[in-house]
Image 1: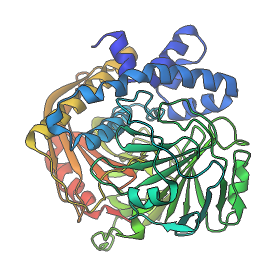
Image 2: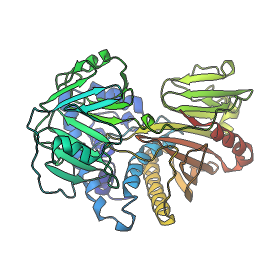
Image 3: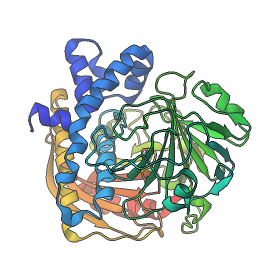
Image 4: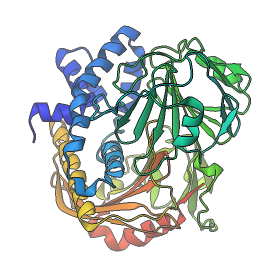
Length: 485
């Protein structure tokens, strides 16, 4: 295991929670149960939430400060690796705790350390001059229409030159007087997100002044005093709670990320981007008929997957009362689930003689971040794949070390392989490895990471190596049934 300081830099949110547990300010349950941690966070007053977030940000500075020091020979792929490294921590927690509990979320934070900035350039627009209008499928600034193909030059023609430019996972162009930020990938000049700040976050790339222009979404005038409930009056807007005060709105092809971390009565910032489906929708393989005895899970806002009801069941909890023998199609209200061997919910003795898991989770990236599309083919060198596999194994071992206090000793038997595969017209990255919990039989794990523009879907299959003949064909058929909508 690494040093305490190293652990803090790698997992700042986890480190802060452990500090609070050690002080007796919070129950140890928050380390292992996602529902508990969410209820605890919502019970805190705003002052305490700000105190905790400040401590997390303080510890997180070391994470991003190290990035420019890594090898330059993989620089073109590094943005992808950084996003993967961030998301895989969540995915690994999901895989590890599927055996004993529910996964623990981590706080999503923007970087607090900036490698370099360019010299300031003059701004052509005056503060308060901007008029930004957001309607279904349309964004306009001072009567100039922008879409997902608009480039940085298109925005500069309207906004003028930025005050400064910061190179992070994406390139950030900051307009101090206007209170806005533009994001584009390092290998493209296509602007993927427009950030509007109603408070100063204090980052080096944050605008010095808050937005003072005119902003409307549909018919609704938007400023810092906009109450969260008012958003529900916008026709056609669907709103999703991403927890910790962040809400994701969809208005046609427009994606809106609202930050209400301080209070539902105060909007801190808004990020505007375009759904990739507005230009290049994924065309997944055609759905096949459902086999007799199988159930089709419709995963909210994601897609679907089929499984045999006499072989697997949904883990107890939100779906524990479902009788799979009565359903052939079942709609899940959330984009995550755990399947386990049949009979475990009812604690049948024979169920404890087996081990099967299928775990699924969707993680949304931060505003302004993006990865490949689900049907977009990409390549990585063998050196990059090995490097990232080693990072995954390192994260797994850290998670397993945390489990030791509960009496569970998990270890990696074979680090396995990392490869890019084609699955139903999509191109997930697949990590195959073997692990062992205490003296239990060795388990084979296959984790599929499907990149989907502003999110990553993780689908994990695991079973005992000794049961390969029984499980492999069934899991292959389940994978063949998996579709993104």
